[in-house]
Amino acid sequence: MNKPKYFDIHGHINFSKFDDDREEVIKAMRDEGVWAITVGTDLKTSKEVVELAEKNENIFATVGLHPDDNREEIFDAKNYGELVKGDKVVAIGECGLDYFRIKDGEEDRTKKRQKENFVKQVEFALENDLPLMMHFRPSGKTMDAYEDGLEILSEYKEKHKEKLRGNSHFFAGNLEIAKKFVELGFTLSFTGVITFADSYDEIIKEIPLESIMAETDCPFVAPVPYRGKRCEPVYVKEVAERIAEIRGEDVEMVKKALVDNAFRVFLNG
Image (cartoon, rainbow, N blue to C red):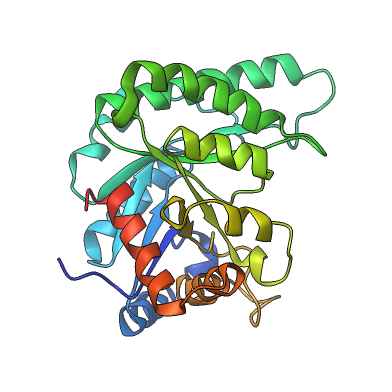
């Protein structure tokens, strides 16, 4: 399998923001040598991304339940079982913990629901020998969602070692949290935020390049010079180049390493 120039490991090309020109966006990806993983956030969108991936050679899919986007759905492995049978599904998620919008009086119930859904998806990933695509968003000025997530992951890692693997997407933790993920064998991915904010420069410099990947989270957070516009998978180029700049390393070497990392984690190569 010939590798692409760039690999956007997390985006949402199935979202309605792309309804008017989805085929043109995908063609631009092909022209620019960009592959992408389109991420499910519940059962409905998981079906959408699988269908999209099966139609396009340069697109892959994840299936799973976001911790906060669909508060009515409870993860049921039976409902997702058929979806993981195809070879274009490369991870389970996006799953994890999101404490950012928890309302007063709902904390215990919400955290319990999120943790139960996350554990179910960790076990589902292990059963199907797939990596996790994880989403963690803490409450204001804390690392609580990351800390709780790492506690769950650490317990499963003790039992399953190399089989439990995956990526923490749109990483927004601190260096201490980053190092804990790396120690457990997980990777971290960064978005266009790093092109206009220096909050994560230290992390990108300090952790091994083999633990880093690039993403867009499109249609959100377009990088410089596209801020204020709809983000697209081809903009992952700006993220990859900025990672190289922050690390002070050769851009071609870093671009290749980022693609290699994506293949290692998600495509067993």
